[in-house]
Length: 504
Image (cartoon, rainbow, N blue to C red; front, side):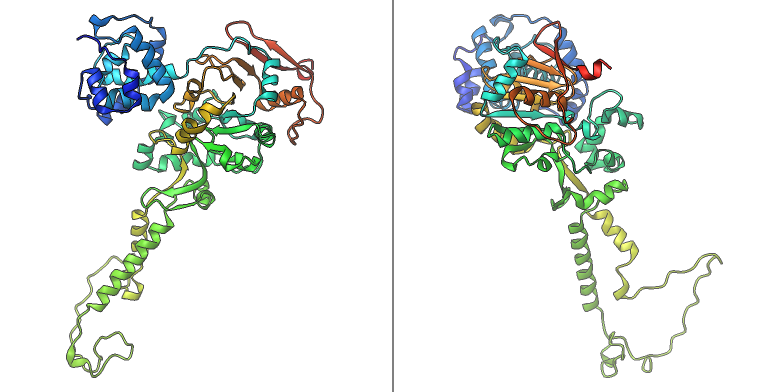
């Protein structure tokens, strides 16, 4: 089939379904079975590693591939739309075959379902690709950018809270995933899988106490971000953390996007009732499933109403109306009731006792309460699990405002392994400098400058070099003697060395 002649970019941006179909020559999209999709995603890391090792091949029109011009336009479109919107517009609305679209990034082969998985991986990889800015390559340049920039995006991960004793997710030995593996879980991510939570919330509640944020302290890195805010330099902080410490540090709600939610609130999975997160902390600490009080109340009211209807429908003997029971229960007066020989009770073992028969007023029994408890919805902290969409505020803020306003991106304490947060890197214009601060480097993204060391100490030194005052009880009263050692290899990597410590 010949390649389409009209360039795809305009049609896709206009979001015209007919134009997209006309462009690609296809009207339908292969169905994606949800079970197959989950199964395919189990191999994502293996596929990603394999794709990293493959050499890019150039396809021509005879191979049913995109043309070089289309390849260029589609890649530009991906950068402007983001991964999800790009795939939705080109494949699901435009009808372009996955196999063909895949030739924009890598060779095409394998069944369509596997290709769909690969397509998601490769567009995600493309989203984090960027070219370094040549004139931004030193610690001095970073300090100068901090001084001059007025709209800084700060993207943070678990590394900014580890100094407070809050575990991160991925560090070997000390990371949360490693701790969960030590508990015998085959895949630690199961704890944060929404489908598994819905099926069996006990898995999450058995370990949730280990990630429950109980500290009332924030780190020096949090204080650094608050300092940027006080200097009117902070555009937005995008945090992947769920500890809600940004609020303690004083980051304004309008300056904060909690990409993965937080423990600040919790919601019922059944009725949606929302409560302050601290409401369910006692259950989390006891490793007990928290149930929804609103559901329990509604179930109790419904049960009480049902009993009331039963009582109102209970038949009465009209001949006994003139002599009601003094108790007011509506039963006949014993003096007018004919004698009936009672049946003997069935025998029972000596060690058992028969439960007393309860009157209507006593029917809210333990059994009934237990039934209501089982039927009530489970409370889930408002953190984003795997399989859940990020809050709408993430996309709206990034696309609608921050993308075109940002003049500097500073990533702190994150491995940038989770999409779509990691795609902020490639979504920003190429002329926006990007700085990375963490203990360990990242090899899948090209930052302009990487500063490797403890986050708290690195940001404190940057503030000192910028002439700013960063005060925090965890920082030493006197500034340590610091050496920035450039690391050999690709990129501009500098290691933070505290000479006062290294000399002892």
